[in-house]
Image 1 (cartoon, rainbow, N blue to C red):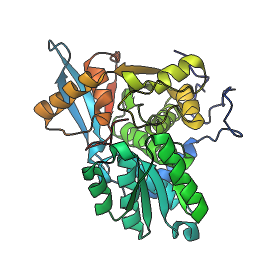
Image 2: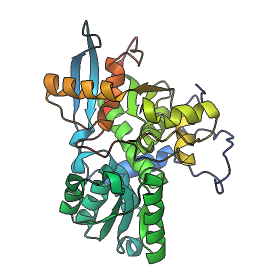
Image 3: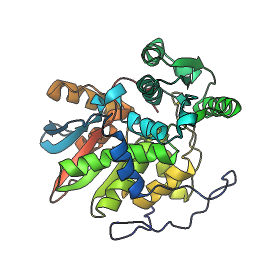
Length: 341
């Protein structure tokens, strides 16, 4: 796997020279550690400091147990880590712009986060959902937080385009689910929480499926705080966007499986951060994810989404090499069902 050009001491990393295919416009935006600390202070009154559980779980095959820490972000407000990024985006807007409301495209969790933020701040929110995956339960969850739901587009890329064009036409702020610097900085605050809670952290395992906003931010914050922390991203094997893109050296389109709702390729900002800060990308299968969901519930009574438990699956399957010293933490990033990648 390609490795990044990263700084060896905390602070600002030098951006590598990247080559992207046609379609990229202008310089790639980035996120710095100072923005993450500012986001942490901004969000502190509004988001939960979710618990970290120390657990011993059966490995696969069931012949030994693996000690690890679980960051239970599935217990976050609105059910997922996404509220960190969305709220940081909203609170970073000028008041007059924020008053006009927010628009987003979502496959579930980001939509719930935007709707919650709208209720919290007293602003109008509109959530566009991908038609084949807009279940009655998903719509009801988002509408309970007070958002207007629009079901349009048959793929994520189409729905995202429709939503962003609507926002631009009406002068409303568009919350990109994973590729906005303020969203990434908010998501990155999760890493600061983990590092503050686990002083001897040496390995951090993070979901890298969907758009990659969480892995982008968490990896940045972890490495810039302590370059010795090993960051491992976990993708679903049938939609390995970052795996294929890192091998190619630039974002590439992945084959389109039948059940897929995420973007066709990583956005440049996410690819750039993953390339610079993530040590390794590993993969798990749908079946392995389902088995992990059962283990978490049976052993710990922890309920999460399929996307949310990919790091735990990778650890239990020994796709992640255990640290020789210090602690390993796997992020459980979401509850409920988000339409699956």
